[in-house]
Amino acid sequence: MNEMKIYEVVVIGAGLSGVCAAIKLKEAGVANFHVFEKGADVGGTWRDNRYPGVACDVPSHLYSYSFAPNPEWSRWYAPGAEIWDYVKKCATEFDVYDQITFNTLVESAVWETDRWVLTDSNGSTFAAKSIVSALGGLHTPNLPDIPGQDIFSGQQFHTTEWPDELDLTGKRVAVVGTGATAVQIVPEIADQVEELFVFQRSPVWVGSKKDPEYTEEERAEFRSNPEAVTKLRHDLYQSWESSSIDLHRVGTEVNTNAEMRARQQIQRSVSDPEVAKALTPDHNFTCKRATISNRYYATYDKDNVTLVTGAVDSLTQSGLVSDGESYDVDVIVFATGFKAFNIANEIDLTGAGGLKLTQAWKNRVTSFKTVMIHDFPNLFLMMGPNGTGLHSALQTIEAQGDYVVRMVEHLQREAIVSLNPKQEFVDEFTRDVERRFEGTTHDKGCTSWWSDQTGFNHSISPGSSDDYRSLIANIELDQFEVGG
Image 1: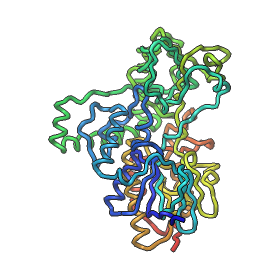
Image 2: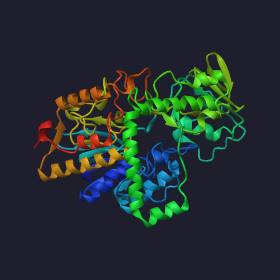
Image 3: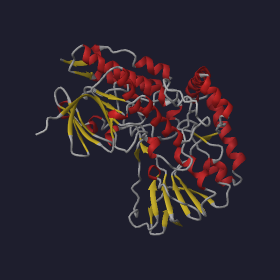
Image 4: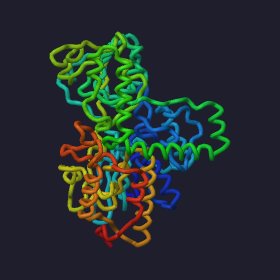
């Protein structure tokens, strides 16, 4: 019988979080770590999402590692393919590909006294003193359970499974959902299809998008003068940090003006008053996650585009039914988002005393400072509950990578077997999150994927990235049950 392989650290996932963790662990000299990735390459969501118009809604010079600036971004908001290329380039230049096993899904992990025992999709079992969950926050598709999906004769898929060779020319297409993904897809395909039906349960605010291309002269300056990239990133950081926080506070000038501009964009773009009314939310601008586009609203003025207000009740052999009306289509695109920021959807985790993560999070998704969970010792979360913010996710990802390194080094240096955050400090952090969300827009007249069934916002951080880095800057052993 082969002896079980034992790692110091296992990282699960090789998206931006997992690659960051691998880079930082390698640079810290943690030799015995390994990354397991279910896909065939690094990149995570940027590998999987290849739908028309896919892009990030954070400026690319801010949506990148601070230690790996990219002078080649083509525009303010680079398309998804460029971001995927960037992740691959970072994994190559920082030489972490050799630490990654691809096409291998970690299916379960069980805490056994002093280590984690993991099982993967190939049937292999191995152990690790510590686990880093880099499974991503917006990764698990949220597919609706609609009657009749098995009888529809056309093509249907979630946006994460967009077929590479799909040609929509002359097709009748339904897009189900009007979140950020749909806002990107709808304008891209409207002129290609014969007829487009967009099914909207509730409208979303869409802000204007300043998205200039970088000229060749600008990119040449970025290549030859790294300080120019540093300054641009700093300027973006300063404006993004302050405005994004104010954007989520009721009555601020930034919030009020953003909603006013979105209303004006609807009025300018949509000539049919009934359609314009249907596209206008009845909640505050950032009660739900707002998105950006200069083309989305105007798409509904096209003769071949129909906004359907209401849920999809069922699928038929030839299409969809909503509020008793049938719509015949050839292709159905589910732009229905993700099961947000809950790794229990991805992996079967069993902590101390046989506690399942699904049990621990049954009533509320909580954490210790976003990076750990009570009774799941030596499990470190990247992009965990409340682990990203109203700013660039890369700001918190890097802070989480640094936290992982500090914790692993602490375990090694002090010969500590396990660190388990105490429940009282989980509760303290949860109360602080609730308190800090008071006065924000997140409970102002809507339900959102940001919040769980209790109304608790478990997805994003209520403060700035500076606040977040301070939150996890120090390790205080009195906040942990220390196993020796």
